[in-house]
Image (tube, rainbow over all chains, first blue to last red):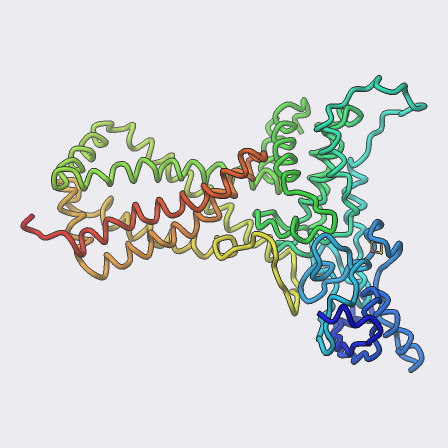
Length: 260
Length: 219
Ligand code: FES
């Protein structure tokens, strides 16, 4: 690691997936970037490349980003074959170039899944996730004004588990890292989050069935328990949520009164 | 009226629950199968002949159990085909570079291949014994006859190892699939998965080793 060389710059070779639109055939292009500061985030490094490309009258590399502080889930880069890059529980926007060495070659690809079609370069369409949420990832009980403290008891442990599941930022790294392109970690985080809280109870059974159906309709793969999703998740969401969703689904299938 | 069953079984979660359940039930079959086989070591195999006779004594009930076993296998195999094909389909465009860092293992990525090998072996195994002429006259003799031939013994040894590789992922994975996950349980399962795999590989692998190297027709 050349992390200590704070004022030095690095030369990095980037191999980036370029694809001009959803229908076009893409290819990997090589860019040599000198003057990379170890303080830059990965996205800032791409910004520098893009400025140079714009200066040359070329198309900049399209990539998704918004908050750049690891909370929105917009950034979505497969870096050297790992979702969000080499650092554990770190989004691509929070990955810093100090983790690389002078002379490194870095491969950057978009998330790959049929359910996440490439829009352009490194940008993929993740609206499949929105449709899964729309199928049941909410509570429709009117919340009214805030109730008195302690009027709605929640076991501490459940509150913690729900909070852990709610940490999901919906970035799609789980799908990207899954050998089967399955979306179970994402969907299960949402199901678990709401099924653990009293506010989620009225729609508990309908929710899990509707969300799993929506997930299946989007063409994601089936989970076969490689647990790659958990390792790739920038928020450390546990596969325990998937087991919980499996239980919830089984339970809902058996007890819900709908025969459809 | 029963649409809900079809829907549930066709869903991604339903499929994995059935996959896990049938897998665990097949492990249950392996337990009894190994228990029966171990009687080959009892009194020069007379224990095994008695065991086979005991099973034969169930008559039509045994046939029913066999049919149940066939149904389990078919269900497991059908789902394996379906899951594998669907999962291939789910990512048509593959990564140029991919690095795993989760629990992906040789066992977990080779489930379909090891399963197919086990199926191939199973067919040979049934032809060797279940459907062989005269097997039921002297089961222990038939086993000795087959496994003392080097070619057969090697196939049976390899099959035992392949079964172990399949179980190294399958056993642990089945519990997760049926929703049995809990910090207390998971800690045990992580170790038990490998232990179960080694147990069955060594258990079933011991018979070809015994008949090839340690058994002589006179003994
Ligand atoms: S840009 Fe918001 S999480 Fe990376």
